[in-house]
Image (cartoon, rainbow, N blue to C red; front, side, top):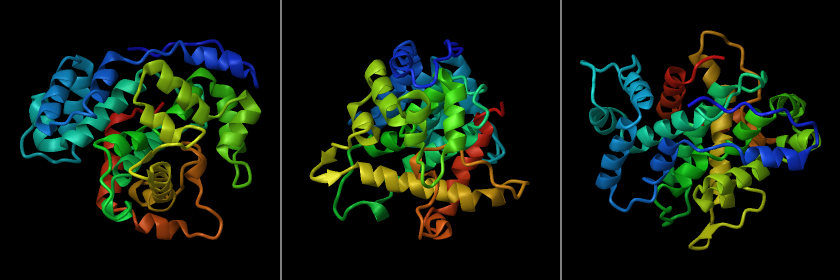
Length: 301
């Protein structure tokens, strides 16, 4: 599915921009992947996911390409979706990758040059994993099935949306952001709304689980069993971004860190804290897996 090309809004034209968000359509494949999040039977959910992926030939080809990539170093290639999901990727990772690929087809980020798509999806996948890390959850707390993971994966969906509908002013906001001027403020200055408000609009437009907007929107109101979920996701996102800044350069040929333009307000470590300390808390194997998988999935524009 090709991304819809929309006219450029003028800076500060918030109402026109919000109306443009209403034109974006969620691919059916992404919607059907999301339906597996709240499934009570994990085995049934996995079977359903396999059917969803198999019904979309381009997605099937891309997911099989990931499963057969050098990263997994399989002794023999897999040719069936079920084998890739069950035996190579695992249900959670396969669902997150399929959802990411399907949603990416909605957005054209090529006109927003400061935006780093690989950074965006690497930190999204890593945030999804870290948000369910029991070491950082309240003692005895049982997270809602798939809830925190999807909230982590789609935390910055509003930013991706703004990059598509308003690439030039969003790019300016990304470049203007500093420790004293968070991204949300820079976006409001340039286009009148920020990525959290855009997330609320797109969640409503696409009828996504309301938990996503409640955790990632402007007003954090969501708590489950008395536990506030937003701080959990925000901490996971901050750890993912700190890993990108400190540990990720060692995985690339270049020693130069990519511009800080692919994430939300937590992209820079707070003053007085050590990014390397935060990055050290991220399991190296998990972070590298997310990075390598995005390398396989996301093209360089």
